[in-house]
Image (cartoon, rainbow, N blue to C red):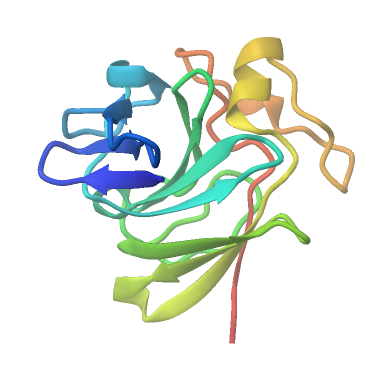
Amino acid sequence: VQTCALPIYAVRAVSTSDGTVTTLAGGSGGFVNGVGTEASFSNPMGVAFDPDSDTLYVADSGNHAVRTVAINTGAVATLAGTGSEGFVDSADGEASFYGPYGITFDPSSKTLYVTDASNHAVRTVLTGYCPADEYVASHECTPCPDGTTNAENDDASGADTECAAILCAAD
């Protein structure tokens, strides 16, 4: 079971067998990609899990972004969102949200459905092309449907900041 913790801005795991709580990532407020407690969040509100890639998706409401956490390493990357409020659909790293809150994952289509609360919209993010741990380990993304990898968007932490995220609004 994964949870988001406020006000310490962390993503935590709770063992279903003994109730042990561990911090996967974060712990201080901010908008930093990194590994474990080197990463930071601002009001993480919702989580969704992709069991095929062991990737946790986080609706980072205060940073207006969707973030990934690789379960096995704690590596955090920004999948979509710029850190600023907005309502832009984009596949080139310029997508924006305004307070993403709830999030769910459809494993059959590798699609995230994100409640973009302050925009009063449900948004979709197509994923499945670069789990955070795959990128951190290899610095390569599996090609997107259009053949690109968006690997040029690397940040200094070694995490890919916008790998293969395609953002659209739902009617």
